[in-house]
Structure formats: C-alpha cells, structure tokens
Image 1 (cartoon, rainbow, N blue to C red):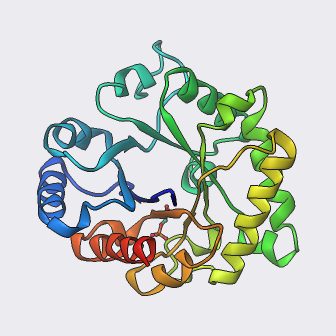
Image 2 (image 1 turned 90 degrees about the horizontal axis):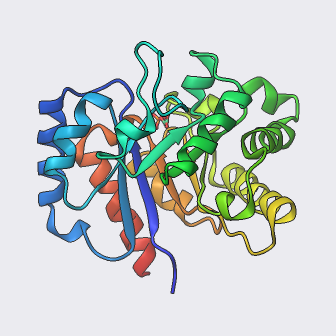
Length: 253
Ligand code: PGA
C-alpha cells in the first residue's frame, strides 16, 4: 500500500483567528477531499491555534516556531509544553527563520531535540540559496544542514522527522524548482539519510517553494516527492484544495 501524500500549508504571518476559522470551515466542508490518499496539515500563527483546534476535525495542526526550553525567562517565546494542547507538528529550520531571524544549525538541532522529547512530529526544512546552487554547493549545503540538525539524535528519533526540501530561491518567488531539480535533491536526501542513519530509514520528503495547483501534479509524479509544504497557495481555499485534489488523483491513479 502506498503511503498517503502529506499536504502541508505554512500560513506564515497571515490570517487572524476569525479568518482562520472561516478558512477551515470552508475547506472541511468540501466533501471529496477527505478520502484516503492525502493527509492535510496546517502550520498556523500561534493566535489561531486555539480556534483552529476547536473547529478543525480533519486537518492536523502545527506551530511555525517555538523555544526549545519547556519554560523560563524568555520574553515573547512559546514552549512546546504550551503548544502541546493545540498542535501535533512543529516546523523547524524554515529559511525565513534561518535568514531573517538568524537561526543557526545549532539552534535548529536544539529545537529538533526538544520537539522529539515532547513527542511532536517535526518537519525539518533544508535548502540552498541561489548562489549556493550556482556554485555547485547544493548537495553539500543540504548534507551539512541535515548533519547539523541530527547531531546527537538516535535512529529512532530521526525516524520521526519529516524533511521539507525548500530551495531558498523558490520560496515566494513564483519560480518553483523543476520536477527534475527537485527529484534530484530528494533522491540525494533519501540516500544520504539511509547511508548515515540506517538503511531501513524511509523519511517522508516534502517539496516546498512556489507550489501551485498548476505545477503540483508534475512534482508529485516524481518518485521521491511525498508531498508539499505550501506557503502562498495555502492561503486560499481554492488553491489549497486544488492541490489536495491533485494529490488524491495521483494517489488513486
Ligand atoms: P511559497 O512558500 O509556497 O509561498 O513559495 C513556501 C514556504 O515558505 O514554505
């Protein structure tokens, strides 16, 4: 049996609680979306988590950020313990956190340890910048992001991590990686993980970066693409549901 695709949305700093509620009601009312073949997950702003938790029945919920400590004097931060009531997934290492907020591989590693310790399902983002791609560094950059994040984790921990390959140059630019470019990196991630952390590892690897209804089918046709992490196109019910539909068609074809 094929594993279902994972279709995840990352809302970033968009939507108030009432807009979030409206979205989830509308999405979950679409009847044919909730068949076997696609799991749907939304990373929403902290302020939307309580209402989403109340209203969402079919969609899983995740938080976009957190501090690795359980509690403490960290003004403005949110801990995994606080998120536990609302979210099952945690997003770690998104390129906006790495580049705008200066998160290092060391921080990302601490967050991954914390997420696993608190029994969340972590989604770890990796990806190269345009310059790194042009310099032929894509594979080495991603390998070192994986090694940095997995430092000190055991095989059983790593098994719980979903990887999202998000080339930085494709995020929010409208310019997605071609299916061949994405497949090449996904295959490398899969083989690196098997080589380094155990042959029986079969991580779920999502692609992210300007995913739209129009390019989602050809991306999902690639053997090593197991789903998506979607920014812009996850903000509208029409585009997000169209991508879920495409994944269901691919699953049942
Ligand atoms: P995008 O964002 O789909 O708008 O390119 C993807 C992401 O940042 O996860």
